[in-house]
Length: 515
Image 1 (cartoon, rainbow, N blue to C red):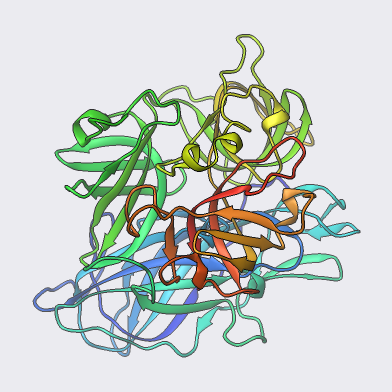
Image 2 (tube, rainbow, N blue to C red; image 1 turned 60 degrees about the horizontal axis):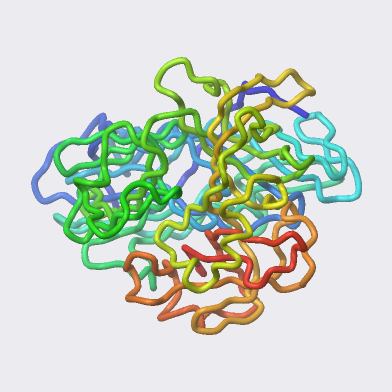
């Protein structure tokens, strides 16, 4: 297993025929052509879709360090993105905000270059033989992490964007994972400009996307942005250790949901004043507005104080008090953090605390009314204390009370006293659908073997789309009955499974995306 963190430079992304010019918004930097007066604002976001058949990928991490607009003539303009590190697997259902060029995009034709570094893949070898990644073998059935040098200069060959005078517009980049990652003769490789197919790795679209189910002047919804809270008036800042910073303005339409332990921000009386406090760990959803700023859609406190929390995808259950995860996110104690050296994509052995005993497990429902429809399924996890409640494919947030750094081949080890079920993100094919349920198949292999070939997804529509607790539909009209059978969907779900691995429904959807 290659644990090296010395990561190679990816080639740049070339997006041709953009009618754009420049300047920076908050957290961004403009290096030329920064005049004003009637120019447009252009925001940039990123999503990902379509997976290779093998291997089964848990994390594909890249760092985005710069976006450059190059006009037909003249100097390029450089933007430092708001988002620095992106886990592309998270973007199967979610969206990353890359930055905004605010009020300085004049008419003209430009190319767009995005400089990426630090690509690292964590994967389950679900083939029958060893896979070589960066010169290191990964045995069949093993989960491995590798850094890979990428070949090719990626491009979007047929995308034209027309900026309007004073316009407020957006562009979304879509990363095709299958076209970028290949497994040939048991060797894993990455190529950002393959000869075929065409288009290759990247496509681009104007925002908002069709059937995005957004309101006026809203370009995208950035969801489950998790980090530490600070405040300035009605503005909430969430600082993430893995994804940068998001600043959102609270409005009369913002929702405030209770914490997973149901001890804070509980209705009635859940308001900005009673729910939001400096130093909390919180999850927010925020609307990217057409002017490049954010309005707070939903706020949920996860922990009242800043502590060491690690989030990860479970890929192995070892014993009644031990399991193993691939790290997908973290929050650090303000000083003397135990897990400062842990990174997205790392593998971590987790021991449930025995002295003192681990707290009864929590479920982060984020406003979904799971207890109303499916309380029995909720109790498969909520209130449990052993790995009988733990299943491959679940995503959990863990409070770390003790930590031992990795000493290869031995993984890092964490002792945890709090376990919160959070959101599994993946793509699967639609088998059938009704107005509130979806049957899916072809789950990622790291979920392990399930008893039934089709798994049930429960969607929640007791209210208008966009309301608190209502499943967010992206690219879907009306409700889930309009999903197209045999076509894949990106899902963000709670995975509530029983001991026999045959619960139905088993997934409870906060997000359904069908491009």
